[in-house]
Length: 427
Ligand code: EPU
Image 1 (cartoon, rainbow, N blue to C red):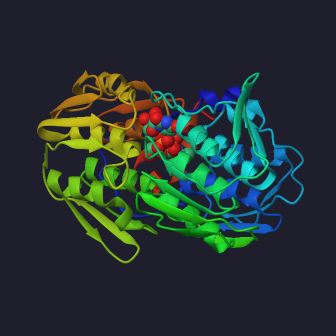
Image 2 (cartoon, protein in one colour; image 1 turned 60 degrees about the horizontal axis):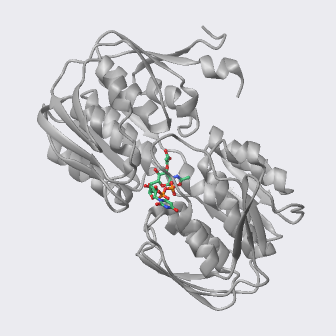
């Protein structure tokens, strides 16, 4: 990232109801593990519906540093081949740049019996330990040690095991699945994450010859196989991007049809939108969201799937500033994901934070001013606030958003938003 990129800001003139259709990209958090899964075979893998966002490029560079080949084929197809992996040590300078890089540990350990990585970086949203990943690798027969900045996992042969995850971690489940697919015998993972992204990875691994059942429930079983082969796989739509546009429609009093979406993945959000007084109409791969009148306060708890997605908590909190009454928002996944509230307050939001709970009084008239994106999702929330505010809002550090949202300003612009990029030499 150049210093110019860090200088980019979005200038948003709010007050315009969004209308029209928007097409959702492939899911960032499904693509990242799928890319790591390509390390499990010498054969070609082709991933379809891959968004062009910064986190994908970081993962591609991690895989290249290990010796794999990664190339774009067309706008959203990514070809990967890991026949010539030359090291099992993930490059620290890249791993510290996002959390998902740690997903190379499971497949490297599974295929080569050895893997090393420093603790991963990622957004500042609370404690993000990796103890669940490490405990699972140990249960599968790996020795774990810490050398310099890295965790090393080594095993002569991985064997199936019964694993209970202390927390249903997404990436933890994904890493363990990728380690277990080539282990000898049967692995049972209890208290597994049930997120659609985990199901998407299991489906890809099964396409590659793995034998996984139960993905999408909290008990996943894996019957180890001797080798995996290449596969071609289409990734699921990004439910967080879809939810963000649904909330953008609602907060601007708009009428937006979200296309290429799987509404089943958004039940917890749609339930809350209806409770708040928004009209939602799921169709075949589409979702129409229409503001039907004034919004009402509601309570929300961010929980593991199928609970309300923590990645939509900040955007939902922003919507609730426009709802009549007092809403209570509990963040139960991360211990520090309400930092964006102090930015929202600069626009006039009335929110009290106590621990991991935000008490939001509304509706408040938001007034544009300068704010800063702190991570991907707080950035999206601030863009939504800017769309609802009177006057002009400038959101700084938009590179955070670009890690997770493909062409967000173009997509919003098409829906009628007054948003433009400034700074970074492009003003
Ligand atoms: N946790 C542990 N031990 C572990 C791992 C996690 O206690 O070993 C705890 C964390 O401290 C946290 C909770 O589990 O409180 C949730 O973490 P999880 O491991 O499920 O998150 P993750 O797999 O690291 C993925 C997404 C996040 C998303 C979370 C929760 C990817 C690459 N990232 O992270 O996405 O917030 O699941 O749904 O899949 C984002 O896209 O903006 C983002 C942060």
